[in-house]
Length: 300
Image (spheres, rainbow, N blue to C red):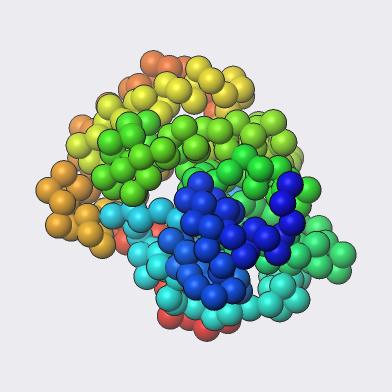
């Protein structure tokens, strides 16, 4: 394994492998060597075992190694919004959220900041953090990164967005998304196993895989679900999300410039039953999906 300083000087933290010196310039993710955070606070819009009744202690990081044209957090995508934080400051924020009643610490799009996070999580654990740590990720990450984080991460919350490389290239600028994401998710399972719940229904450890259904792309969703059913532990927990709404560049793409129809989502529901997927969650098809987007104008 390469030393941390070399990883930042010739950054290979994600599959982009930009190999740039993040002390001097920004990579594809838009991040420097410093961690940048756009929002810290309780978040109530995750799956029931994550949000619980008191909320998930969410830390929204700035920057991303994908370029999803439908990104609901597009203001964070290029790493421009937010405040720089040190590992000590972020560890203190984690402990403060635990004291405020958060069920867990929820790291949202954290992969570009892994080096700082490893130090942060070590400091937080040493200072007495005991609630679970959730790694909320697009899954476009290296297997080695998963292994490095496994000492501190209790719950993995990865997306599996695409099966079709043409879609992932067109909509997220990552033709290798599927092969990369399934390798990372497989490693997450090897490290933590299936999702395990406490008696109160809250997540304790394990993996919960998310999939956002896109309009006009029902076959992509079916292939993703079929792959998960056939290739991951039979106890796999899958969260199927219906909250898509056209935003950012998707407003200009005919294929994506509308919400899901009831018929589209009904077909996904029927396919879930056909596959006999036993564990997971299906989000209700609503009318106010915009409410799930956090307010990033808040200070912390």
